[in-house]
Image (tube, rainbow, N blue to C red):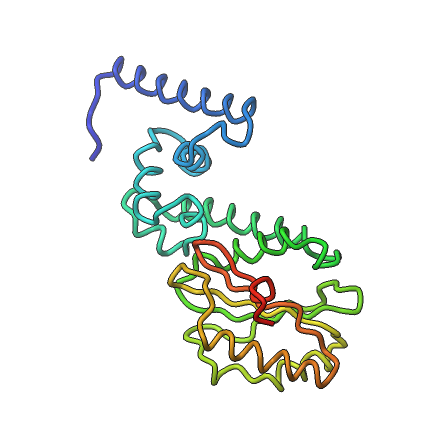
Length: 236
């Protein structure tokens, strides 16, 4: 049970809580992008599921547990509920924010030339992959205008070079009428620096593409510490 308070003290505490929420709301509406600290923004998001009470301790506990605001929002709802004080409704509210962010980022990429919307593409990939604790390999297939026609999940889990077959990747391009592609995968370790295996498999796929007329524009590696383009490093 929570701590019992006399009637007047309870009303005073509720009034103080409402005042805090109102102040946060006004700062959010009148300030810029940095109007609220990360834990304060998380506090505000929790208001929708936790109607009364101080959400600051819970917000700070979530950030301490997962490491950052972005990691909290990217966390699986079941993992969120392992943090004391956060129930199903709160986990659903935070998960909805994550889904909305993904769809906003995807909308900035869809129906536009990918090479001309490069930062939007990186944002889209980072939101989806930067905080995964397992590997995910994707192939972004493009048409002759370099517009995205298929975001293909090639593999998930523990991915090694033997699981990625260049011929199958290029054959898929022919099947859907793609003329170019971008390889993408994440490093759960956090560092996006390419391994020897990353470089080797990229070279094999790029060579297969050259022989069959499919351009491999890039191989992007996503990590919590940023991203790396193999083309920018001169490795394609």
